[in-house]
Length: 344
Ligand SMILES: Nc1nc2c(ncn2[C@@H]2O[C@H](COP(=O)(O)OP(=O)(O)O)[C@@H](O)[C@H]2O)c(=O)[nH]1
Ligand SMILES: [Mg+2]
Image (cartoon, rainbow, N blue to C red; front, side):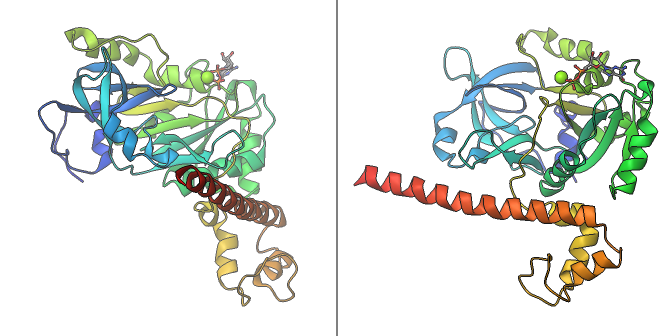
């Protein structure tokens, strides 16, 4: 990793682990802090700017994941390309990303956030705990190269320890932190997640206290953000920022999601590693691990070496991904046919 200080370190560049790319005269690097429909807000060493995709990068994007997302590092023009907005020229390669299936009927992926170190899955003591939703978040994080941590907020209302116990019993093998965001208590462990300029994204159902937690973490740094703009070269925008500087790191507040549809199986084996390990030794190729006699997974489940609840979750998610890949194939075939008939 390059140890050289850069003017982008306050935005977490140090964690990128790569050299500053060579820039042309009219180019700068910034980080996407908000994504609007077709437009972005980015932040760089001299402040925040509104930006749109330059024609060249729009033409090169052929997959939804090629477009910038919150957390992305981008090379942009230093002067406006329309009458006020900068042009985004390139999205720099991501070191991690949180992907999910986009809402809507088309089976396409959506990048929820990019270049994230830790995904904080926020629960609260006054809301019912949905273990399956937590599993989905965990798979999403692991699949995109992001470390998950579970944050049980509203510990002041009681019941936090019980939830922690329940999750451990359920086989959750990730850090579980308790917080009281309301009064800014017990935040030490969350602050530690920002060590070394890390990017922490918070996710979870609406009302669990994500924004309250973000406000606590950025605290007086909202002022620091203001001072970045004070040299006059930055531009204040009134839109709500989703990525905020919380020295030593960066926090991303995501909108509350009621459901998460996983995009692929990349994180499944990490989250259910005890099942994946046994499955690897199963003598049947293409085993469904449901009822084949002598299947190593079924045997391990009968022997209580793996939990039957977790096996049910694992198999349901495997099935879901399988169905999704069929759906993607159909969708792409239809799209190709449409394109071909248009060009004929
Ligand atoms: N008692 C208690 N209330 C909290 C805590 N954190 C947040 N809240 C309250 O929970 C509600 C939802 O918080 P908010 O941050 O908007 O949740 P979000 O939808 O996840 O962003 C607000 O009324 C907060 O004041 C906490 O630690 N304890
Ligand atoms: Mg919120």
